[in-house]
Image (cartoon, rainbow, N blue to C red; front, side):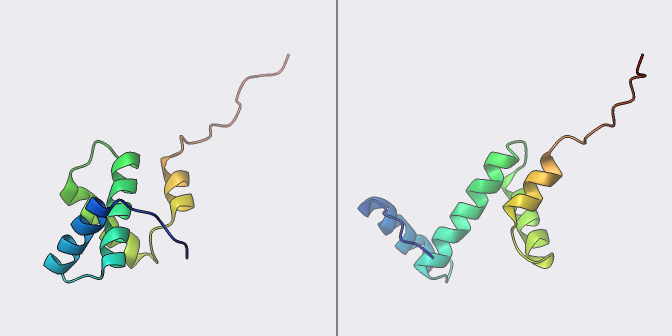
Length: 84
């Protein structure tokens, strides 16, 4: 756990959003960070699709950046060149 410095205006945005969505301020900030992280990793997906990813991640044990990176990495192809 760590401390993150936020601008006063962002903290106010978090306060309003957290009340609107019945989340704590910390939970709202974490939600926005998860959505932002997934949006950066999957820019082609819609917000609804990102939400589905979050649900699947939670079902599968939580959002794991290392696992996501492995899933996004190009498949390693074996070297099939014949040696001379």
